[in-house]
Length: 486
Image (spheres, rainbow, N blue to C red):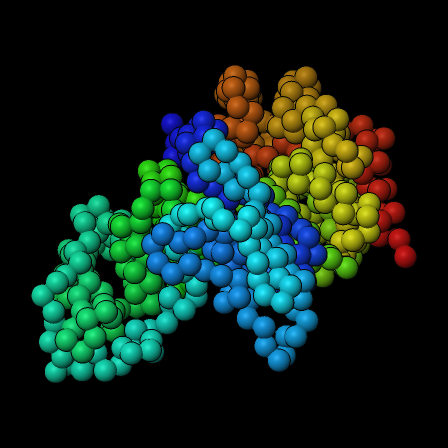
């Protein structure tokens, strides 16, 4: 079983005995009672700058009496200044917290001061909050400049990182390290300096790259972090290149499974989101008059939504890349001039539930832009708000490939440039795979073409040979009507 599969299994069995199930925030930095649900041990919160990601991270840190250091309090996390007089008046933070087999609500409320309810028996847990200050160079950190002087003497006590931690650092950063340790000096025994040993010798955190520096500190923490802890990391990708970002998240998933950690991250990186399963992706979205929380979004949608490089007149929201190809081809079939295609952007955003949620926002007229939602044909009956679907009653891959088989694979040998006998056998064999999402991959592997190329050819031929004109008009006209809305 895969790492994600094993975490899902253990989580469904209730093996996480300490867990924040949800956080509701009211009257703090623009939040008006919205609730975030945490549905997976490792969750990533994404959204544009200023939307309020850190607001929820700070709230999470304040949920417990910290058993591994100073306790975090809202009065310290949400400082009231002369410039922010009204930003936290009447603030309220509510939690639903899992402790063993018991779930209970708790909350902070600010009147003249912050008060916690219940007054006693505040839950206890080891809490670690890593904000972006962790990426500061060591010589820019308070108290470390004088330690850099060569005249200091190193103390005897060293914290050595284990072989497992050393392997983890090497894996994440993509280079081999011989040793890793932390030491202090006679200047200030409380201020430690991390040292990595590679083939060139020892390198302290004063001269390590920012990614090495931050990762070394994180692995020191991961080595000693207690079971069932809460780990919060703001902008987890900071200072790491894309491959290292991916590997770090994979390692965090592994540690979360072994130590039953709850990890809450914030990110602006698609590389991070790609490694988090849909149930762990949380998107904060600014509407016209309020903020919304979406779950299970695709990384492509999450990151493109905070990138203003495209300015289409209408967004067409679909489930995945396969549906995007179908909608584009349907529009292309009717749009001889190409003017409609140039005015829209088809965006894969995640599961049918995400598409249906966006359809609700469209119905409520709260999206900050015009949009239309189209769900896969096999999911239309599961939707409450989305009333437009890809033609057919089956999953798109099944619908299109089965329809083309019923046409005896007409013209596909010409399109793929290979003999009909060999190609048709490959196409038939692909349909024997139990997971229809793998059908186009199987075909591509056997004809030496990419999955996306195979799918684009199949969709083009399906639109020419199989697509009902009425179904085509329904989708095309719905998009045109949306474009013509005032």
